[in-house]
Length: 302
Length: 255
Image (cartoon, rainbow over all chains, first blue to last red; front, side, top):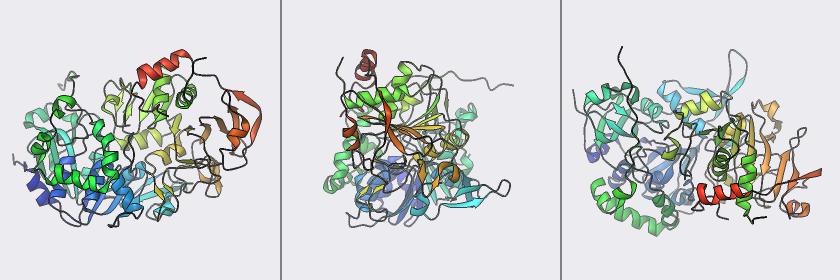
């Protein structure tokens, strides 16, 4: 079997280019900060960044100057405050302008559904009475040919590259995820290229023993990167907990542009990759490593 | 009577809105706490659904975010977000949706998008998340928000989540399946949507709060029901659960 395993540096160099439409998905869970940091280190510019929740990951990429445009549906730091690099750009308080294209969560999910099914748009019963279609003229309507009902539509989103963090995959990229699934499957199928980043590289036999857990099949995957703890400060169910302290602390870091740049210098530009990043966070692994709550397998026999 | 904070009272009042066995779409912040309080008291069979995909969640710790790993462990189902929004919410299965907002207006429209003009906002807020579609589809919506004049203008700057009269039409005229925000739980009293007009009117005040005090915190001539209800204070069990069990680190209860 052909191995797609690459280093993070090589995978980003090969599949993420200036001007690309880039998706790094994962709803709270499995957000691949390691990939974002490598994109920042390689100095990518003019990216169209798409995610339901830009989260700290895109706040960092906006601050690092990677983004030309942001496509999103909820731009906050849950339970902790704001994404201040994003806010400075949108409120006109930073030098670099940022174009935005805004939906609701359902709208973003529907865009990926259309993209993954190779349809031009997706119908939904949504947006009536809201100002979102005024703010974003790409939210439109269609009349149902069967009932005559007017339904909202959103256009397909087909990224150049989608990066998904997973608990495990084999060398061909057959990726298994458990815990919150977000919209990663639809985003991956919608995308021209897919990079899977994993906590653990496993034999194909491990995947085949439990095929229902595979979210993304290797046939749509271009590269597999093995990067343990690559989602920190996000989390990987069964591997490590979300670093809520980090999210809370981000409020004060991102509020001050100088502090934010100092953060990027120290933890992104100042390290060669995830291993050095982890070395700069002593005690992190002990603090966040997951407890065991293992489920029994099922009988796949017939 | 034990003393309690505004947040504790709002939380307790919100929890009382939930009946045992109901299916509730849980949002971040105080709604999260209120739903878990209800689950620990009168509504042990509440089905908590989070937009992150956790169905029938039984979090052993208070979720800091709506994507907390504790929502997965022990839940009934974890589904994709496409399933949450299509098979569950758009399918009409959500009985109660809880929403908060930076601004709530006379008709229960909610703004979580911008203060000021959209193109050059004075304050950029997070945006909709799932709130727009929850406001449209949930069978009923309960809003939790602190009362003050800036937060309760006659008209919101931007309609993120529609109430009873938005963009020139009623919910029925606009084809919205759910009943919309039937109740607004604040830190001074309770507003309810008038069944005829959809306008928010004052229906209950908390102990020690005057009607004038509520009126001065609202940006439109607030009507009050003739017979105002009174609101029971949180009992010792609720206060114990909130302070010692559910939110010991004052994640949501501060203020």
